[in-house]
Image (cartoon, chains in turn red, yellow, orange, green):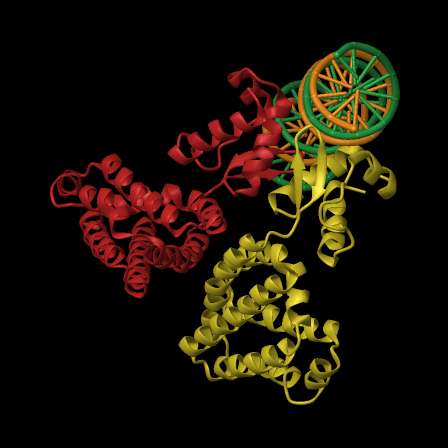
Amino acid sequence: MKSEEVELHLRERLLRGDFTPGSRLPEVKLAAELGTTRNAVRSALLALESRKLVERIPNVGTVVAKVDFDRLEEIYDVLEVLEGLAARLAAQHGEPRDWTALQELFAPGRLDDAAASGDLETFLAAIDTYRDTVIRLADQDFLAETLAGIQDQAHLLRRRILMTPGRMEESLAEHRDIIEALVRGDAGRAEELKRHNMKTARKRLRRYRDFLV
Amino acid sequence: MKSEEVELHLRERLLRGDFTPGSRLPEVKLAAELGTTRNAVRSALLALESRKLVERIPNVGTVVAKVDFDRLEEIYDVLEVLEGLAARLAAQHGEPRDWTALQELFAPGRLDDAAASGDLETFLAAIDTYRDTVIRLADQDFLAETLAGIQDQAHLLRRRILMTPGRMEESLAEHRDIIEALVRGDAGRAEELKRHNMKTARKRLRRYRDFLV
DNA sequence: GTCGCTCGCATTGTTGACAATCCAGGCGAC
DNA sequence: GTCGCCTGGATTGTCAACAATGCGAGCGAC
């Protein structure tokens, strides 16, 4: 197993929440588990550190990054303008027929059921499809890379936010509005609506946080 | 010399433009020059690769990243919304007295002379002071980190843009407007003006690019 | 002349052993 | 009992030698 594979594997598990935040990730143990060398694990952990998914303490070890709510609110501020930018660019670059698949996916029916029954995975997959479509049509590699790096850090909390009562319905309605603006090619409106969507997500985050305290 | 020192040292020289883009950076040679080991240089280069300041080709070597104008235009799109966000937050969080130093620095006189005589270093230092002040008052660590990473990649071209005829005068006028809005605490206007400033910079970039071809 | 082959050099990649560091637990002085 | 010291184990950090890789020079066939 090469270093990049190890990184991908660990990233996958970290994003899925397989490791509890704060738990340790010893290089030798991971190397044994994955049937690879300590060096491969080591450089993978170094890469994951720069993505802020783990924290490395010199001469002590690597631990899974803890969620820092203050930092997460800041992340959502940044995400708001960047996802808004992506929506604007996608509205400018996309043709109406580019959106048909997304329109069908968000048409009344299946996602309403998912929202009603709390089917998180189906809902998440739909949002991911929205994101992929928008970022592809925005056609800006740098923005895509930047967003990907940031979204990783917010991923764990994204699930929690969606699980708060009523959030899926709210998000669904917001995304339908956004998609409608995107199809019309109304770039300004699409950006505005996406930013609104991120703002409501941020509010949910804050509510969830207060709930925890 | 530790790995982080090597990274800082190389980053400094890369941003200053000491290495011509595309030139090679052999690990052994650098290690000898800096009086350190190959490993230190190696991990420094790995870190610089993730910042996109150098490019590493497997089994061949490390080369100084070339300027990719398409990518730079994308970077400016992202910078536009992020610097705009920073200006908005700074306007919200800052008190009038927080801005006095910046106001004095940008008062008529010294910077006009610098712009007229083409004194790039003085002008750059003033812009950096603007940035530092805004990012400090915005008081968002995550935004600061994100911006720092991105600005590194645009740093080399920033000088070239400022050297285009009339750009310093233009930029100076724009920054005076921005600062005026910041002092007033007019967050919306400050964001708008900063975004406008980035747009004109982007236009200069495009003109400079066309000039090269 | 040019195409293709081979060989050697320069460079990066990997490995395993060893050094440095930190932390926890125990032990003794008081 | 508690404070301070010390030692053992676990973990990361560093190093030097060796392996793998890619590139270009040189050579020969045609």
